[in-house]
Image (cartoon, rainbow, N blue to C red; front, top):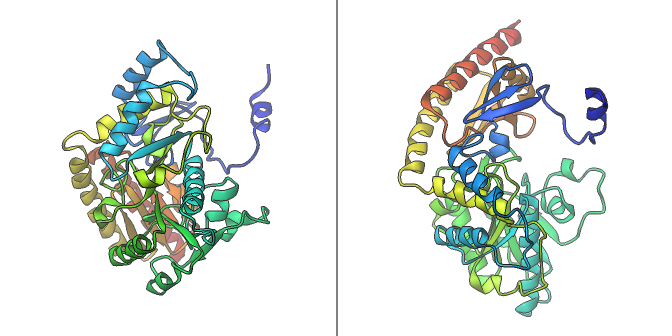
Length: 399
């Protein structure tokens, strides 16, 4: 039998892993192999929106495991069709393509934008506009769509066809419709890029420009969707209707699933053979998605989340007032960024020592992603730990 070190060395070193071996999860908590319990405010990177191993999702999957695991998209899949109906009912979109991840959902969106332009006879429209500090994935096209130099390093030449503009910059709006733009792809809240929120007026103007020119507006909801920001989708409070949205992470409670949703006139560009996925929306993943979504859309669920979240922001702002090491608190719902003056990694390590798990969003932003089901008591545990870390680091800074 191979030793633990031999097993670890067999895995490609594509992640800077935390020094934790997770063996169990339930609700807001993770346990390591020694039995130590952590408050998990990473939520599997905004994936376990209902916490770990949510009961209703587990029950639904248990039933499906006894019936059918996989049959491919050559056949009708009832759980997939049900999930698609739910997603379209609770959004402004009309049809759904299922895949396995956020990057794949964004790949599908990029493909449909190109196909739509060709179908409409817009042969000069060969570019997709994205924005600085964005993050859309690590596949060939989504990496090129991501306007962060650090993501590109070592992988040039990049896939062509993407043009980057400043985010939240009114001057950039005049550069959208240059005769070559087929689509605009953006996050309403930039997650990996540092938790930057799109300004309402700016996004409404951008949406109007796209609509007038028949440029597709694609909203990347991979991290923000499925209740993460306090509404089912982050685009909703802006009063706009995108042509395409992409979702993944929170949709399956940890089971791999992604989806690209499109308006009917756009979806028509994906005819049989235009795109596909062997595993996309298979019976188990679709069942997980359906069970997850049922919980999120229950009456009062998101209202309660927002009430609890308001208290969290109030407490975080109080910590900012007493700590010169905290530069800014920003975010929405349970997608929160704490910009610090030193390294985010220092805060993350100290919080981990206090059995609180959080993430970075760039070098100087601590990202907090509680499950939507977290309690006020759990939030207070995180707040208390943050206060302690702020004081400890201030003491170190002051010598």
